[in-house]
Length: 495
Image (tube, rainbow, N blue to C red; front, side, top):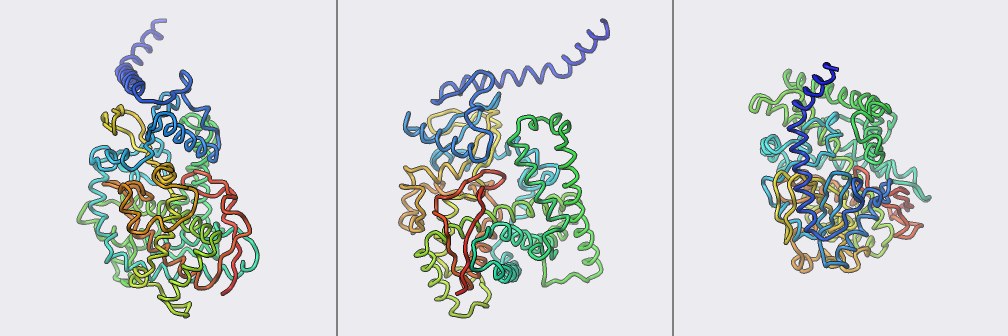
C-alpha cells in the first residue's frame, strides 16, 4: 500500500501542475467560446459526430456549418469543439486578416506533428524562432532570378509528360497518377538534382514509400483509434510508417552525401544547380547539419509535388469541362509560341499568358490544393468582434473563404473573369489565399505557378482535353491535399 501511495505522489508531483494548467486553459477557452455564436455540440464529444468519418463528409460538413453561420447570425466565423479542442474557422479574408498579418501567431497546429518523423522541423513544421531563421536563409533561393534556373528542368519534365500521355490518347483515363509522378520527378530534380524518372519507373522504393506515407497520414486523421501514439503503436501504424520514412530518408541521405562529395571534388554540374546545392553552400555560414539539410529537402519534396499535382489535376479538369475557355487559352498560347509545339516556355512567355494565369487562379479558388491549414494560438487573439482564446486551433481555410457566396457569387461556377484586375480590386486582399498569406505564406508559390503554366502550355499545345463527365460529377476529398475521389478522368485528342 505504501508503494502505491508513493507512486501516486510521484505522479501528482510530475503531472499535477501540467494538468492544472491544462484544465485552467480549457475553462478559459470554454468561457470565451460561449460568447461566440454557434453550436458547441455534445458534452465531452463536442461536434465530432457531425463531421463524419470520411474526407468527403468532412468537407460537406464544414461548408454546411459555414452557410449556417452566414444564414443564422450573419457570421463569418465557424466554431467547433472536437473533444477538448476548440477550433475556429474564419470564412472571409477580412476575418482572417488579424491572424495572417500576425508576426507572433505563426505556430502550426498539433495535427502536423504526425509528419515530423519524415519532415523533421523543416520550414513547414518549424516553431516560430526556428522558422524565422530558416525563412530568412531560404527566401533568396526563391527570388525570381533564382527561379529562372529551374525553368529548363520544368520544361524537360513537361516534355516527358506529354510524350507519356500519347499512349493514353483517344480514350478516357485517370490522368492524376501520371501528373503526380511527373511533379514528383520535377521536384526531385529541382530539390535534389536527382533524376527519379518515376513516369517510366513507378515501382521504385522511394516512389512507393512517399505514396504510402501519404496514405498512412490520411488513415491516421480519419480513425480515432490512431489519434494517440499508443494506438498507433498498438495497431501497427507506427511500425509501417517508420519503415516507409526510413526508405524515404535513405534516398535523401544518399543524394546529400553524393552531392557533398562531388562538390568537394569539383565534379558537380554547375549548370544543374538544385535547391540542395544552395543548402550545402550555407553549411559553413549558418552551421547547418546534414539532418538540417535533409529535413528542408524532404519538406520541399513533400510540399512541392503534392500541392502542385493537385492544382494541375484540378486545372485540367476545369479546362476539360469548359471547352470554350480551353479554346481561348489555346489561342493565347499559340499567339505566344506560334504553331511550334516544341519551344520551351521561358519567363518571358509565362508573363504573356495572362488568361491562362486567370484560369489557374480560378481553379485554385474552386479547388485549393491545401484546403485547411492549422495554427495554434499562443495568446488570446481579437478577430473581428470576437476574442478567440489562447490554446485554440485556428483554421485557415481557403476552401471555405473561396466558396463564400457573399465574396464570390455563384461560387461553384468556373469563371476566370473573377480575376480580371477590376474584379480583384473589389475584394479583400485575403479573399483569395490558395498559398496562405502574411509572414508564413508559401515560400514556393511562384515556383508552383511557373510549373503550372509550363505544364499546361505544353499539354494544350499537343492535345485537346475533353471530358465525358459533368463538371460537378466528382467527389472532393480533403486528405493532405484536395483531390478527386474519382480521379481526374479525361480524354486527350491530338491537335
